[in-house]
Amino acid sequence: MKLLVVFTLFVAVYTKKLSPEVIKVWEGIVAPLYDDCVKITNVDPEIPKTMFELEDLPNADSFICYMKCIYDKLSFLKPNGELDQDQMLKVIYTLKLEELQKCIADTPKSTDLCKNTHDIAACIIHRVEND
Image (cartoon, helix red, strand yellow):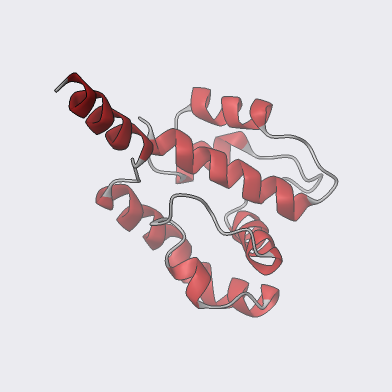
């Protein structure tokens, strides 16, 4: 019996996903940018349609740059490539400053801005999932 309870808790923790409410709001934020960013990055149009429903963000190169495109269009990136934390906190529903700062600190820095934005986005999704 104890093993069943432990297993159930383990599954509940490790299969946690974004709530339907968060998915709906986040999809509403990126929907107006979808066509432009798909065109700019040549990503398979089906990949971004389910990105918030997946446990992990896709790692296809074109999708990684799709995330940078989204960040650009939402003004999450300053001209020098740094994240505009104030803008992100205004726009990203349920994101808290502590979560964002933890993601920034925990994400390895790369010279590839596409990879950086993808990795930050992936971290944010996991932090919001686990709240």
